Structures are given as C-alpha cells and as structure tokens.
Image: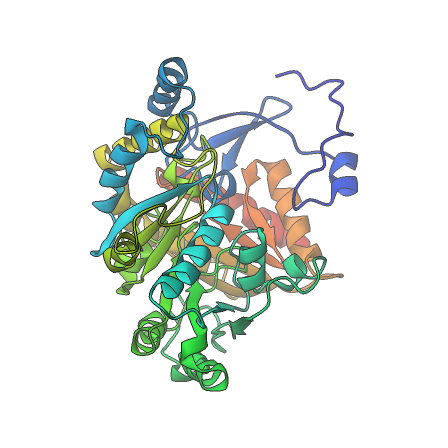
Length: 437
C-alpha cells in the first residue's frame, strides 16, 4: 500500500503521544498469519496479537468470508424488541466454553462497554433483589478495565484516571498483589495478606453496601502481573460469604491466552459470577464484546415483574456482522484445537522469556501461557527504556508492546518455534545494545 502523501494531521490517535508519533510514524499497511506489514512492504513479526486480540493470526479467510456473507445477507438488524439468529447461535456456542453456571450472554461492542455493562448488571441485580444499598464497586491497583467511566473508575492505573476528575463515587481499590520475589514463572507463592485487604474494605464500609469486586485474572495492561497462588480463590470465598458479586475481566486472558483452556477462570480454578470478554472473541476482525452471567443472576431479572428487565443496551449489541466474525472465529478455535495448543507451545515461549532473567538491565520476567513481560531498569523518564526497546524492535522486525518500563508479549496462538526464536533474537540484540551487554 502506498502511503506517500498520507496526511497524519486530522486523526487524534488513542493512547498515543501524537506529536512524537507523527514526527516518526510507524504505519501498518497489511497483515497475514504471524506478521504485519510496514509501510516499506516488509514483514514484521507480530508478538502482540495486534493489541492482545488477534489470537488466530491475521488474515483468516474463514472470518473474512463469513463477514462478507453477513454484509450481503443482513448488514444490520435492531436488537431492541427484535432479533436475528446470530446472537442466539453465538451465545449457545460460547456457553459450551464457559465455566459451569455462566449460561447467559449480553453482547457489547468492546471490552470497555463490556465492563460497564457488567457493573450495571451487578448494581441492578442487587436493586431488584431489594438490596439497593449495594452500590459500592471495588477494583484493584494496576487493574485495567477499559476507558468508559465505569471501567476507568474501577481501574487502577493512575495515568488513565488523572485527567478526568473524581469519576464515579463509591469506588475502592484493592492493592495489587505484588510479590517481592523476582523472576517467578507462573503464579507467585501464596500471600494470604493480599486477599485479606478485601476483608478490611468490607469492615470499613459494611458488606451490605458493596455490589461487586472486579479483577483481571492476569493484570495485562498494568504490566502482566499474575496473582499469588490461591488469591483468586480466596477473593471468591470472601465475596460469596458476603453476597458480593465477583467479576473477572477476561478481555485479555480469554480465548486461550493463559494456556489453561478457553478462559482463565476454568484453568485457574475460580468460578466467578460474571465474565467480561472481547478481543479474541472475533480475532479482532470486528469490534465486539460480551458479558457472561451466572444463571442465578439472569433468573433474578426474569423473576421481576413483566416488562423490560434491564434498561441497558447498544445499537450494535449482537451486530450481525460481529456475530458472523465471532462464530467463524469459534469454528477455527475448535477445529484447530487452539486452546489446547496454546498450553502445548507455552513452555517454549516462557523458556524464551525467562532466558532474559539475569541479563543486565532486566529487572524482572513474568508470564504464563502465551502472555509475558520483561521489566527493564529505568533509563531516563518513566517508560523511556521500554519505549526505546519497543521502537528498536519494530525497526528490527518484531512488534511488541510497552507499558511503563515493561515490555509485554502476547503472540497469536498459532506461534511456532521459529517465531519464538525470532522474538528472542531481536530483543536480545536490542537489549544488548541498550544496556551494553
């Protein structure tokens, strides 16, 4: 694709230092399989699944064909007081991959919308059960739950919050369960004090004021932090004891990312009340999110007086084209057994990441499945070290991601050994030069 003369002025780019980018732009003009293509027509290995979402690799013809057929057959259908087959078929398919009890799906257009939908469902659930005092929401430091007002409020990344005033009232945050140990592969050792902080918050406010706790199974955008052994299970015990809903944000960890099955909840041994998903749902081909809720929550709404049970929804909820993309993506996940495959290739991927442990400038390495992070020693202002490594790797032919001074990795589930070796070789060269190995 010819990008000569491309006018960069008028697009205000999200989560981007616009002036710096436009002075030295990185333009993606195409993609296929494990690769994206830069403006010079060169293949760049995608070690990030686009933005945590292209789990199946780029350019899947099955998804493109399904989307094309949907656009020709039914390009749009209203979801309010009307229906079309897509979301009903998709919900039935998704339930088969979810933890037992999560039997109903509400469709959104993104993870951000999914989180706000989950929070509203939680608040409404308590209200219809006569517990309208349960309005408090609890997130976690370092947590990322999208950018709408609800998700920003329960999120715990400071720079995502600081420009926008007080946000929603009645929100608390658990501390991030930060292990003092470095270079721990998988879950850090158990730390009872981490989940015990929830009991302190409950004691302060009273359980009957708290609607829900929302956490990521693995804190992705906050730096790829794994919970200590038993942490999520203990949160589940505490929330269940006090009638508080537990929401797992699996926007990143869903669809095979952790190498423990379709969703981290099942592989990690925790049974939430609500799961939020997006990204890998359609392989990033069409924006879509979903909220899976436990049958008991859905039943409570259906037992309310006749009429609209939940005054919430989006013009594009269950959009025909998005449903077609998601159904085609599920076909590929199942046919190629990719959830199990992710578990089989994960050890080699983690071996590659942990080969950087002990290298000059490497502060920590963390990871599980096909997600991982290399934390770097600061060089200049916060984030400068990882930003430099990210740019150098892009120029050398590998696309990663950086958050703070941490390099993040999340490759497609179709990754092969040759790709793992390429990621290693490029970042070894980049970091060796950067930290003078």
